[in-house]
Amino acid sequence: MKKNIQNIKIKFNGIFLKNKKNILILLVGILGLFFIFISSDKKSDSEYIKNIDSKSNIDTSTENYVNNLEEKVRLILEKVEGVGEANVMISLNNGIEYVYAGEEKKNSDKTEDIGQNDSIKVKKSDNYEQKLILVDGPNGKRQPLVKTMIEPSIKGVLVVCTGGEDISVQDRVVEALTTVLGISSNKVSIIKLS
Image (cartoon, rainbow, N blue to C red; front, side, top):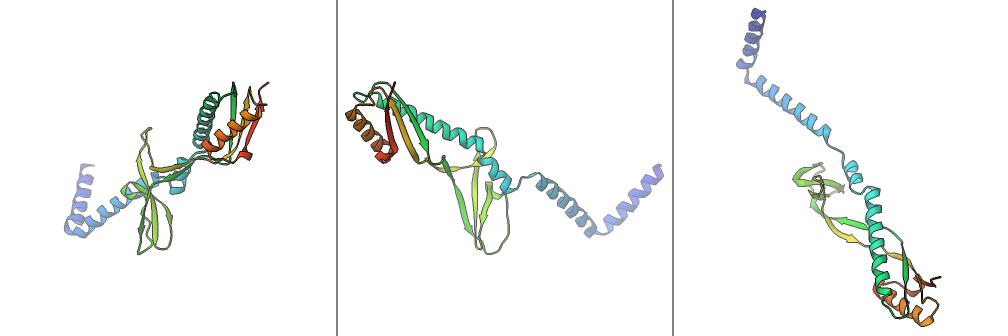
């Protein structure tokens, strides 16, 4: 058995020590296998971007936005003369939209470099490549840097209040809501609280 192992060592050393090209080829092959193994663990761009804006996260942030806005409006309306106790419901046309920070660079060829320089490729046209800039998130995972948040547009506001039958109260409430929320008066409905 020892003799077989020694024969293998001698043949191995004979092949690779005589020809340095064989060593280089072997190392390149091992390195290639290593890169293939590493790249198979990474998610594709589309999978990653789907995980960024999962529906539950969007629903939660939009719901929180509406709840906070309704509470602020309710508190301020209850201070308006004649309104009394108030309940507010706000409906939206759409949810919160996020614009992510990215970098765009001009390409002379059509190569795909995914994951370099802490960014991922999002969109590629003939001569331009746009990448999202990734930062460490609060949960320790890499996530895109939010550049701006676009607030949703308001579809309508319903106010149910104690003084809702009084025309002068309705006028004050409509004026307050159209000014603060930037909506037209036909999007506001005021009803008397029973």
